[in-house]
Length: 185
Ligand code: IMP
Ligand code: MG
Image (cartoon, rainbow, N blue to C red; front, side, top):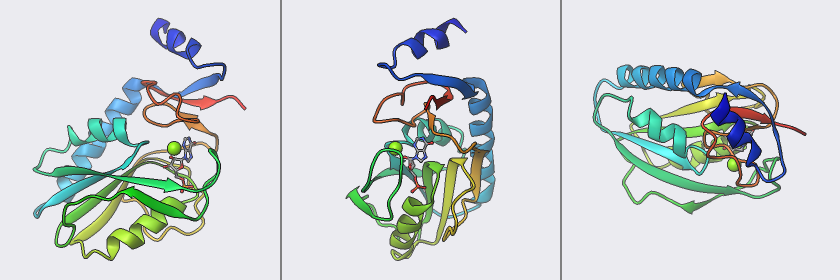
């Protein structure tokens, strides 16, 4: 596709090696996820918590497909370590000001890899007394050895390669790609 070829050229030296999920495929799945989420929450206050930065595009599409009242906030977590490997430590750089107690919390993540980030956040958020706590992940690599809480809503199983686009980055690049691609090693 012409537009995709143009975007692929502007990636500062690094190359993406192939489109793994195109924009149309993503849009259809995200819309279906929104419908699943709408059906799941019959009553009560729902707070959708997007984990920045990776979830920002997914979250903005997802919330427009959740056809019931809800509120949106964000979490900013930073994990120590290098760009392609996750360490066990997670610290919060931004913590939502809103009360979590008594509300349904839906944590939205771009991709589950080792599960370290989610495990720390699930413990932290669970301790604040939400009415329920669930995870929605766009992508799941299915390699996490022990997840405290398995995501209830998953967009796609992901291949065991490094993915970029639709919010996912490599060293902060490629987030704007409207599709998901693998990065050439
Ligand atoms: P985990 O703690 O190892 O599960 O890592 C989760 C975070 O690492 C995600 O929220 C992403 O920001 C990042 N990450 C893991 N795998 C990828 C990938 O394939 N592409 C881009 N970012 C990734
Ligand atoms: Mg990242």
